[in-house]
Every structure is written in structure tokens, then in C-alpha cells.
Image 1 (cartoon, rainbow over the protein chains, first blue to last red):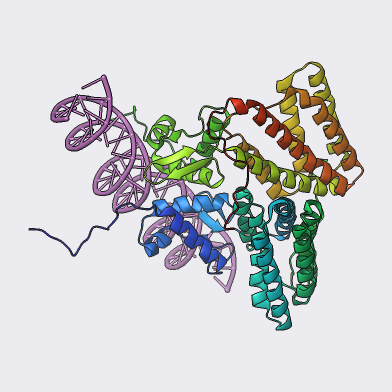
Image 2 (spheres, rainbow over the protein chains, first blue to last red):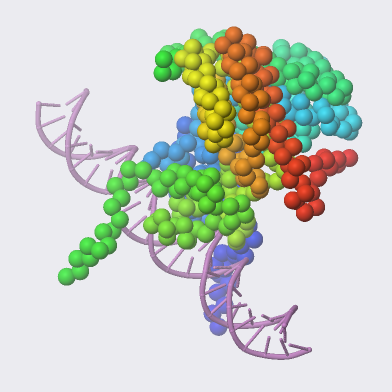
Length: 244
Length: 244
DNA sequence: TCATCGAAAATTGTTGACACTTTGGCGCGA
DNA sequence: TCGCGCCAAAGTGTCAACAATTTTCGATGA
């Protein structure tokens, strides 16, 4: 009787694949700042830590490469991607376009319940502003943006938008927020909800696009302020005339 | 004497990974219609055919899953994704938004060389219309769209746009083009290039967005025409009021 | 004839191993 | 002291094999 209960040979009824959890875990580590831009993903070590083999880890990395969170180098593996100023600005433009689209779609179909929810978020953001509670404002701000996208009822958009935001977090210097802009930002929110509740697609689209572009402008200003810190050759914002 | 020259143990100086070529090959097969929507990817067979093992094949599939060309089912592997009417229409909206954004960006920085190229494409499309050469028109149309996106000089956008178009090709019934719309479509192109050459970002954005939305409308009309063919319960276009 | 059950075959998810490449350090010589 | 080249260690890219699961197919019974 060889009941070797000391070695339950890994209880795997194969009820789920390892890959999605791993992928989420790496995403989490990047989001939490445990993995900084440029860091190499050590497949062997990660696999060991998670108690699995390298196969699923590689698959997860390959997926993350596709959504832009990692990049791969031949014979050197996967690295946490890092985006420069140009790419960050590019992302703002894309987000602006998609956010505007979300608004255009949402205005036509948004429910009163969704509008009520948004108004409540705006009220709580006002409170956060009063209390100078930057963290809460940040969270609520993200939430209302997410709700606008959800209200568009466009599955692909709902899937894409968070990915773009995650990619923006790969920008070298994190945490660029200008506290002074909170009030202006929330005023924009109010106008946006107004347009949405009026079912005014065009205005909603325009306001939402501008809302993100305003964020881009603030980002640029912050960049300018900290330009002195940047000793590097300053990645030119000018477009290099392609093949001329 | 076991000089088994019949099996040169795979000459692999590891100068490139297998994964990207495999990924492109699967993309090609889908694009060429060799793999129809719903088909299962047989990892073993594909690996055997390509003369490699299943590892890289799985990695390529995982990447393709992320960009929406494949979907995975536990213990059943990867399938060529298939999108329904709702998803196709959603994609049109996203493409419209991004295309508009591309125009807004391009208008500010487009070069005369790029404009000249576009005008030439429009001229050739006019010729194709005269000759009723649908295939050529289709190709040139794709090309000018691509050039607008390239002119935006937004790397992420240039990367995303073709993926969205590829995903749209996963729609059940392929090849939905209304020949009659060629002339209208090319008139729109002319107006777009006009706006671009004027550096009019707002107009360019609006025209480009409408250009895609016009495509969406044509798509919807075509859908309506062939509705009779669809015996199925007709995937409701109405939005299901989410959580009420 | 047809549906049902069960065993064999096919296929997936994961693993451990192997060859090749890169990395880091050590000693040697200038 | 500093550079240069060699060598071991670490790590990646791929493969072949194994267990679990799904699928196929034939036998069985109604």
C-alpha cells in the first residue's frame, strides 16, 4: 500500500489555465510599481516563485508584449516597457479620440441611473477638492471616466480604454498631477454630464475629447517645469520629416 | 557508424525567434480565408507542418488572442474568432474615432510630398471607378486610409489601426462592398485631402470620422438587404438596458 | 433504426531537459 | 592601474514527453 499522501503530485484538475492569473499578476506588479520600466522579467525566477514552469510564464509575457506592457529582445527575454515623452503624448491623442467617441455613443443611450451615478461622483469629487484630498479625487476621476466608457456600450472600447491607461503608466516619471487643476477638471465633468443628459452627441464628444487634451496640455506643462531635471538631450518633440 | 546526415539536428544559430513568423503566418491564413471563423487551431498539426514544436505555436496563439484574432477555451485550445453584427458595428465606431484623430493630427504636420501621394491615389481611384475595377479601388482605398494614419505620425495609432481592420475581417459574412458607393467615397477623399492641405484639423477630423461612419451606414444597409438570408434569430441591435 | 455508453484516439496544458546566448568575473599582460 | 580575453554561471528559446481532458467511434441494447 503505497499511499504517498506526502506527495500529492500537484492537485491539478485542470479547471483553469495558469496563464491568465500569471498575466494579471505581472500586470499588477507593473501597476504597483514593483516592476519598474526597463526591468527584465526573469522567467525562471518568476516561474519558481509562482511554483510553476516557464511555459505558461512565457505565454503570459507574450500576451503582455502584445498589449504593450512588455517588449522582447532576442536571447535576452522580456523587459518592462518604458515609454518616452513622444509616446506618452501619442497616447493622450488616442485616448482623446476614443473618449470622444465614447461620449458620442453614450449620449444617445445613457440611462438616467448612469447619469445619477455620474452626478454623485462629481459631487464627491467636489468634496475631495474641498478637503484637498488628491488621492480620492484621483480615484473618483478614474471612475467617472470609466463610467463614460461603459455607458458607450461598446465592448471593444470598454476593453481597450483601460489598456491605454495602463500603457500611459509606463511613462518614465510617474505621478504627474497638478493639484491646482482639480476644480477646472470637475467643471469639465459637469459640462460633460450636462451634454450627456441632453443627449447631445456632438457636444459630448467634443467636450470629452477636449477634457483629455486638457490633460495632455497639463502633462506637457508639468513636463516643461521638470525639464530642468532632465539633463538628457531632451527627446525632440518636433517631428522628424520622414523620408522627405 | 551512426552518421545520420538525414537528421541534421536542426541548424539553429538562434538569430531570430520562431514566434513572430508563426504569428504572421496565422494572421495571413486568417486574412486569406484559409482559416474561417470558428475553426480550431490544431497546435500539434500546425507545429508539425511548420517543422517546429508546440511551444512557439502556443506563444503565437496567445499573442493573437490578445489582439482579438483568436479566442481560447480551456482544454479545447484556440479558435479563430468570429464577430457578430454588434461587434462589427462597434469596430466601425472605434475606427471612426481613431481615423478622425489621425486626421486632426495629420492636418497639422502633413508634408506636401504626402499630399501629392494622396492626390495621386485619388486620381488612380477615379480611373478604377471608370474601369469599374472594384479590386483595384479596394486596394487603393486601403492604401490612402493607411497613408492618412501614417501622416498622423502617431506610432501607436499606426500600430493599432491595421489591427482593428483585421478584426473587422472576422465578421461572419465577408466582402461586403457596395460598388455604387465608390464615386461618393472618392469624393469624400477629395474633401479630406483638401482639408488636410489647408491644415484644417477640425474639418479633417470631422470628414474622416464621417467617412468611416458612412462606411458603417453602408455596412448596415448591406446587412439589411441580406437580412432575408439570415434565418437566425437576428442578433438584436437594440441595446439591452444593462443593470437598469 | 436509433440513442447510449464506454473505451481508444486525439489534443491540450504543463513540465523538465537541452542547446545556445548573454553576462559577469577572473587572470593576464601592458 | 587599466584594458582585454577567456571561462563559468545564469538565462533564454525550443523541444519532447506526460498527465488530464475532450473527441471519436464502435458495440450494445431498446
